[in-house]
Length: 533
Image (cartoon, rainbow, N blue to C red; front, side, top):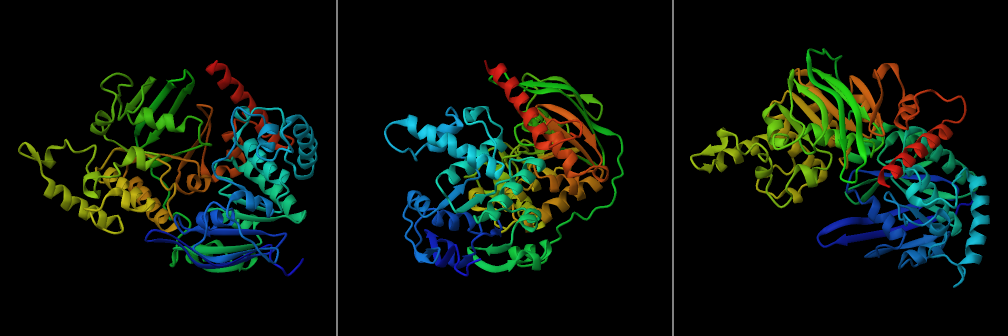
């Protein structure tokens, strides 16, 4: 291996107005290695990679590729320099084929037929070499998320990229698909490719990378060999203090059923059935975790239970049936029945961003007679309660007059949690509680959810993060294609089994699990296409 870095960034700085996103960052990435970059939400990781890929121009600093100073004014220059990037949200044309997406922007000339013929041969070679098998004639819209990701990697390799940047590549994959991706990355590394992996999952960093760099508040705080560090050390480098990575909780003491759901069905505005006879139960003093890849009905389950969407079936809270359609099925009536709801998207469903923190701490509960002072609301009382909540939930800065949009994601989430938990609900519906939240805030949020459970409350937790599901749940239900595929106890299952259930595979396959997952996902996509038609 050569001593010349594949990538060297020297003194990179970038500001957006008063916000210093990157400050004097220097980093060396050696060829033929997988280099991880981690940091809290807003640490500057994506900005740094966007500079490397030509989306942003640095205010100061230099980029060196394979020992040569290189100007990268745009993404075309990055591609010419041998850099490819796979974004967290794929850049694919949905009604184009795999082949058409691969050559888009890299055609050999005005006539497409020679380009398509050449690309078909190159794709076949790349697919065999790197385990990137995908049908070149398939439309993107008919492919699973895992296969779409393979297309993004093939696009970069087709353009002869020697350096590959992947931004949060496993966020939408099952564990088995993530393992397959890691095999692909391992193959690429063995062929001499250089890979930069941006992820917030410390387990993945430890599993696949050779070296890891840690960013905090726009600065590079450390670069270490992965084999010489630990998740605990990396977490401390990310937040500047020791962090408890595992949830500290005593065994649950479940009581009587609080939430009972039987044969719940919901059809969306396109006529696609999203909930297909869901039945589940959550008892007092327990956390039922619902695992699944995004888009398999978990969001619709929370919406129906929270009063946002109509459905058929039966839902009981403390033995009393809830209306599932019509004017009585709304969030206000749900709250009156002891249901609190922390929605999946805090910014569009949990907060009104231009309003102040103290106003947001009372939304949904503002009709409570306690908050009335004659015909007007008692704003002084609401503001005082908000100040108390912000102090107890460690919201930073603890300023109730600051607009919600001016808080970080983690602090926005704490405002929503404080509002819902402090109402002393019988059941808490919580969706993606730590999405886009830094490690320090994750620790606090997990502790609050467990504290509520220990007070005898029932909690329905929806999360795409399997580590979070395992850490918090007393029981785990797995959803796929609008159905419950099975229930498991955390200490009687593992990520492999849950990952297969998340892909609709109910029996352990004898061969490659990826083939079983692909077949299951293809069946699901065919059913959805039929319903749309």
